[in-house]
Amino acid sequence: MHPVLLAFVISVAVNAAFFVYAAIRKTDVVTDLSYSLSFALVALALAALNGATDPYRLALTAMVVVWAIRLGSYLFTRIIKVKVDHRFDAMRDKPLKFARFWILQAVTVGIVLVPAAVAMSAPGAFSALAAAGLCVWAAGLIIETVADQQKKAFRQRGDAGFIATGLWSWSRHPNYFGESLAWIGVYLFCLPNLGAWTIPALVSPVGITALLLFVSGIPLLEKASDKKFGHLPEYADYKRRTSVFILLPPHSR
Image (cartoon, rainbow, N blue to C red):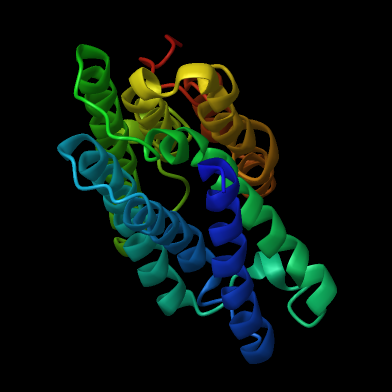
């Protein structure tokens, strides 16, 4: 089986198992956790099935798993506290409608892991480009982690209003920018081993970035923030001065 198809099959199997559990228990606890776990489980399965024991493929596996553990632990800690994810209020009791979320998630995981699946199919060697990819991935992971922790600390302090400090003063969604950067790094790390898949595998960084920018990430959060803080002059000023995605110095007043 082609490694890309294999990645999709494993992703569908993992998400199907999580869907059955979530649908039967009518719980939101595993929804976000399953996203990150899907990446880790697919990467580990691909590494095992391809006999990935060389340093290059072990490093690639570690990049995906470390990213997944970081995100999964953060999301799981958050959902354990709040118990309910209101995104699923209209579908939690409707299995067929609920299943669409899991199908989309399984497909997303498969798409994002396309370069990793191809690179995992044969032994590779470290190169300057792979090293650059590793650095970009690390930068993205650090940005995403710091942004999430800054927002978590802001909420724990019980501060009123919206966060506009730290990385959030340079981007309205620095955590999403970090996530996009991390997958760009994975693509660059895999690039020396992609061969004919060099162009098709761009679906990974382009796809995850487009998803965050235009579908399930920023649009939903911007809409919610506008509804909550849109009447505040300081929020309008924050939006005017602050980049929506890429980390950039705030615009002058």
